[in-house]
Length: 177
Image 1: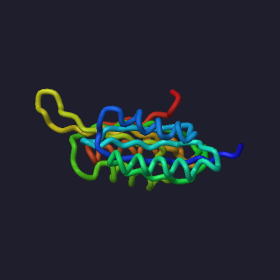
Image 2 (image 1 turned 45 degrees about the horizontal axis):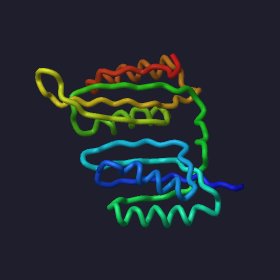
Image 3 (image 1 turned 120 degrees about the horizontal axis):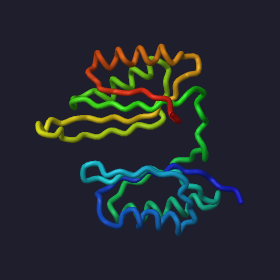
């Protein structure tokens, strides 16, 4: 049987049972969730999933999801994709950073890695209140793919200088160590 891979995104007001209802619609239409990320952001729930469905099941799945979205107050999109991402050549590194929150942190970090031809594979951020002072702090956790042509010590030295210049308390470590 021929299958299709779809990326499905869903955003809407959070409520108990939302994940069960949404995944029930997918399962009822013959969809198989291969990978997913879910988060509560403010009062909104957001999910992105990679779903495998029979080639002739795409339209019924889409219709079922659109019907569910209309009744549940959700915004849902479907997009054809491949089952696996083409792996970018290079080495994977985990980046963790903390700093006092201010606008532009993600853009600065993303621009730094882009300037070194590094691809961001995963990115998660959050804010939290510092103990005692209540100062809003920002945490960034990401995985980047570093091109094989970029020497590790060159990237590390540039990243350390970037962190000093932007007041980031950060680490850059190879994945798997």
